Length: 271
Image (cartoon, rainbow, N blue to C red; front, side, top):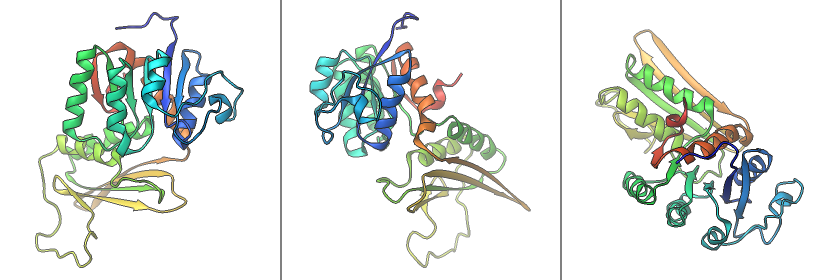
């Protein structure tokens, strides 16, 4: 299904009072092709969504319950930046209402992604699970996958603030999956190495390691380090503020209207 060019896309935002959710609401209110259909946050109270994000009132009152909000909103798209514990149920709720889910929340299992893809196809709608909406981060992952073909010894170091709930990050897992698809499994390091402190070598994935750093004052960075004879290659991406993700979210809201089924990874939407 494709939208007529002058038809606005009605967007519901769940987690609207969160740090990412507020940025999404603000972006939707300022994008000429998008209309805010609903904003959901159990903790925000009945406040105007525009007022919530520091803009002029927009006439949309923040709701406390997703199912009821979608039943009334006639939304085309749901954008979710909540917590891993709620993301799967929120996705199923959106699909049940025929609303296309765009999930910035991570933590889905492969089995859940397969199931949600089938549900989207049954409804004839598109959906997206994206560990990262940053164009720079997508390019970082793409370059890392290319480098792994020629330098298979690799480790990933990802940095986030100390309040992040999951480790490793969804971005690092997606990067690891892309690297694993580009090279044969190779168990790295000395086969007789001993981990004196448990976890010192990081999480194990397809022969290489992922290290998660959690510190106050850090926003979001990731470094992919490749080692070869007499050389190293480091591919790094740094995010400094949440607004940097919004151009990608805007693109996702528009492109999700043009296909059927659930896509995993924003890179599939990049031309």
